[in-house]
Amino acid sequence: MPSDTNPDGDMFGGWIVSQMDLAAYIHVRNLTPERLVTVAIDNLSFQKPVFVGDCLTCYAVIEKIGRTSLTIKITAMVERKISREVELVTEGSFVFVAIGEDRKPVPLPRFQ
Ligand SMILES: CC(C)(COP(=O)(O)OP(=O)(O)OC[C@H]1O[C@@H](n2cnc3c(N)ncnc32)[C@H](O)[C@@H]1OP(=O)(O)O)[C@@H](O)C(=O)NCCC(=O)NCCS
Image 1 (tube, rainbow, N blue to C red):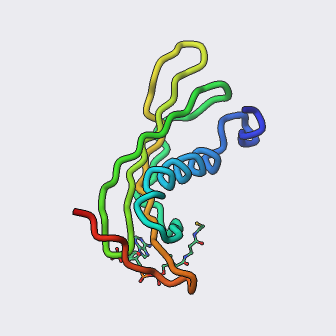
Image 2: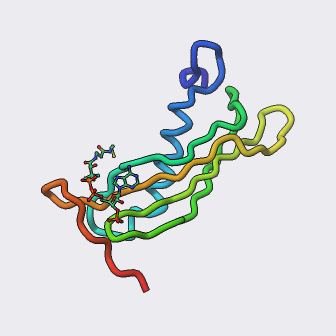
C-alpha cells in the first residue's frame, strides 16, 4: 500500500523486514510454550525492489535449532501487479530466542 513506501515511492525496506519477521515467528511460535523474541537478523539482502501493488509472499524454513535459539530462513517473493511475474526480492535468516518470565534464555523442548 502507498502508506508503506519510502520517500521515493518504493516499498520501505523496514516494512518488508517486518513482514519477514512476522512470517518467521508464525512458523515457529508453536514449537515452544515460552515467549520467542528476535535476537538477530543475519545475511539480510534486498535483491530487487518491491513496488506498490505487488503481492508479497514469505516462505519460511528452519535452518538451525540450538539450545535456546531457532534460526529461520525467510525468502520473500513478489508477484508483480501488472506483469504477474514472480521474483525473489529479499532473503534473510531470523534468529529467535526462547525466554522465560525473567527475560533470560530458556532451553527449547527436545525435538526428536
Ligand atoms: C534475546 C536475549 C534474551 C538473549 O540474551 P543473551 O544474553 O544474548 O543470550 P545468550 O548469549 O545466552 O544466547 C542465547 C541464544 O541466542 C543466540 N544468540 C544471541 N545473540 C545472537 C546473535 N547476535 N546472533 C545469533 N544468535 C545469537 C546464542 O547463540 C544462543 O543460542 P543457543 O542457546 O541456541 O546456543 C537478549 O539479547 C534480549 O533480550 N534481546 C532483546 C530482544 C528483543 O527485544 N527483540 C525485539 C523484539 S521481539
